[in-house]
Length: 286
Ligand SMILES: [Zn+2]
Image 1: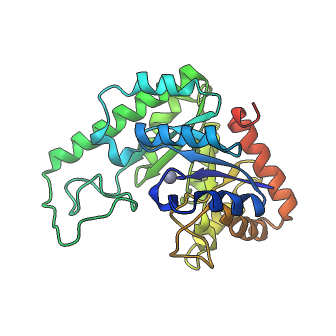
Image 2: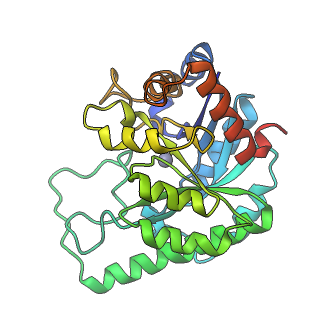
């Protein structure tokens, strides 16, 4: 038995065969799935899915890559959504400096689900735009951490090329809010800094990639009770599906690699990661 703790089930990628995707997950022993919000609309869709399917739960939040499109105060809408019995966390939230406005390719198109217009070259923005973009990301991250603290919910953290700033902004909330650093691809030293503030990490299909040895090294160093498993579907399909659409059933392939790396049985891994998820997202058991 396993959970998929990070899936984007509201994405249009599943519009054609949603019921089959969920049935395949359940047949593969994936008993619970958390659909992660990336905007207010996406969070609302995640809640609707959770209402319709007993195995689906929702996280609500605004993704940092789309920060410029966020309302100036996102708190009132999130506070309302948090009251829902199947909203188990705030997320995904955090900081992402991977594509800044001054680099070619504008921000806001870095999510692979959003098609980049072919042949359209976006001029580079001046460096002041980077400062504004980072400030807006930090603002909405802060607001969402505040809502999490008020609501007594933990957070699903997205960070890319922004590890130190993300940890620094989360740190003052330690003791009230824990984060799971999703799609963790950092080294063991950084993993320990996450655990030191009471937070956790989670691993995706990257652990199965030929060039994923650095992630396997971090998995090996992470205590069995300090991480969860996720697909981040529709992205990051594990081997042998690499490059195809990912779906929650593929937690199976991820778990097989992780069990090998941890030198434990699938049963032990399933029991440990589900227990960690139940403690981190207590509304999974409500
Ligand atoms: Zn995600």
